[in-house]
Length: 385
Image (tube, rainbow, N blue to C red; front, side):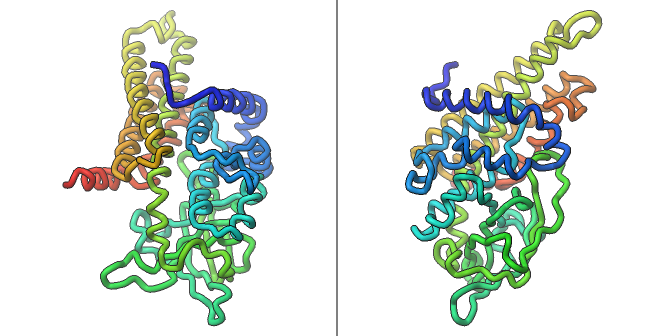
């Protein structure tokens, strides 16, 4: 079916990305994969390409486009090639909305120009060793100084995507005790400079997948954060965090769909070339039936995530709808990628083949951004159950 979600500008962007990946990424991607992260100067290249500034206002060096469709194209093209652009998602999809939503004009002038060029990479730090989906349980504290000029940040975070190379991290910390009737009260967000004294990077976590997207543990010991780096109002952080969840969950869903579509592509190419018992694997009925079933699921996921993309751009995607899209697309991706790996036989288990990397990369989609179980709770609540 013809997709109507993209126009000529999006398709032109797609071709630019495809050429960039073929020329600049694929020849060196295995080196990045072995290193467990992309080179720092790669982010400068993405900045020059305009990847980071698509939705940043023109006055700060961006294109000023209020849409997620270019993000969707980027997601599809990186999945198609079996590569990752490092922690671009943490920089743009996770961090940027908080800057544009909460930052003052003065803060935007300080943050956004370097954000667009890749001179400063951003990450989002919410999760703690004992706190995952329950954000209200955050224990990291930010105590205001007596003169009110700064805060002292103390605590620890884990599973922070982009935490190794980040120059600024949006940290969720408790600035006041929770209320008896509202344990969500008292959280605040800070744009923390990673060069600050007392800020340290712990382990670079050894993940199952997403190998070129670095993930780290962070620690704060009396980190002095200027009051000018408080994002939004003090103690209102929880309400801010909830506002970006729909777009974050759509992003995960679209990534899952793109990974599933890529897996089908890789499997089709493989079975057409691989010979078994004197015939191409594609010749056997089981192969055709398996790929046909996978394609049907990918078609359904495409329709669901495209519809969600239009709703998101229109500001109409509800939390329950975003949860439904994420649940459906991530479950589809796991089923499809597993079946496509099976069609590769033993080679599907070798990291040299992109389907093996997709298998590992896709598993986290059902965990981060809210687990599948949490998505079901949100959907059920939206149904009045």
